Structure formats: C-alpha cells, structure tokens
Amino acid sequence: MDKETTLKLLNQVGVLPLFYHSDIEIAKEVINASYRGGARAFEFTNRGENAFTVFTELVAYTKESLPGLSMGIGTIYDAETAQKFIDAGTDFIVTPCLNPAVGYACAKANIPWIPGVSTLTEIYNAQQAGAEVVKLFPGDVVGSKFIKAIRGPMPNVKIMVTGGVQPTAESINEWFGAGAYAVGLGSNLFPKDIIADGNYAWIEQKVAESIALVTKFREAN
Image (cartoon, rainbow, N blue to C red; front, side, top):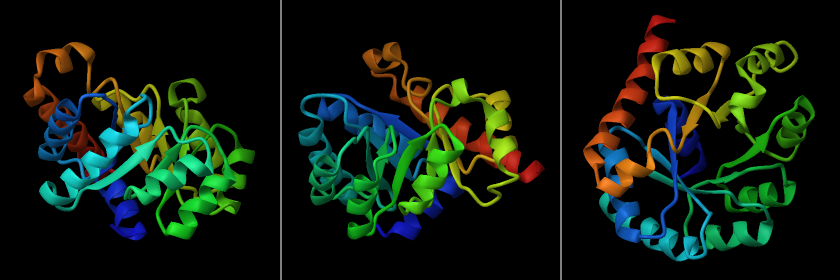
C-alpha cells in the first residue's frame, strides 16, 4: 500500500489497533476481528522472539484475505531491524523513540515512519528527519493539554496518541478535542482474558465502538 493511502486511512478511521502474540492463529483472529470492526490500519508490535516470523506470515495473509488493510510493524529501534521488516513487506513503521536512521530507511522505501516523541524539540527533529505523523507517547503521562499547547507554534503537526487512550467517549473526545490525528489502542482493545477466552466478537465490537466514537466526535465538531 502506498504511503499517502496508509496515512489517509489512519486519519480517516482514527483508531490504530496495536497487538502482539506469538501464536499466528491468534494474531490472525485478532486482526480479522479488528478488520470486521472497521480498522483499516493495524500495528503488530515487535515484542517477542518470533515476531518477525509471525509478522511475515501475517503480511502474506492480510494482503490475500483483508483487502484495503495497511499492515505495519511497531517497536522498531534501529535501521537494521527496520530494513528487515521493510523487506518483509511492512506498510509502515512505528518507533517508540526518535531515530532518524529509521526515518531514512522508511523514506528510501517510501513508507510512513511514525516516531515516538514527547517534547517539542523531538517533534521538530522528527519533522526535519521526514516524519509526516508523530506518535505522542506515553499519552496519559504527557497529557492532552500538551497537544493543545503546541498548536500555537506548530499548528499543522499531525499527532497520533498512544499510551493510556481508552475506548470510551470521554477519552476519545478528550484526545480528538485536543487535536489528535489518530489514536493507538492496545491492551484496552485486547484484554488478556478476552484473548484467552477467544472472544473475538468482543474485540470486533470494541473496535467498532471506538471508531464510531471518533466519527461521532468529528460529526459534532
């Protein structure tokens, strides 16, 4: 999927589910449920020993079975790892911190790079290094007032908030009211007990509800 389409999908839907599991079948079920719920971008996090193997299989599966889904990888720290996942077919890369070398690898591959930031200087440096969207992390620690405050000196910055975002009207309204471009949701969409029970219908509903809350907020504002 091309860069512009991925970023457009991220903004239009407004919710990026992020998830890791070592079991390929469970990962497939979670992505299927998210897709049925309306998600059109999905971040698989590089947080386990066999993450690369699982991700490679997921890319092949989603490209064949889930049309229009942008499949990305998260928790990437260095350019070498980034290149490995680029070669595996990732549509975008999300990093916890700001490493311009990863941004360079993404620019060369013409895919979005969404680096983690928590200060004005980091946002500026990320933009200088080619990031069109940045990830404010951890969102609940930095706070929604931060986004409002930087709108003055940086009115056009596109911020995805991750960390502490809840799938509730109150939380969605708070972040999008502050000016978020999108939000990333992990454990609140995929509680361990729900995964253990294989309750994928719950996940589908929770993803759909979260996306509907974003749509409702935007329509009202």
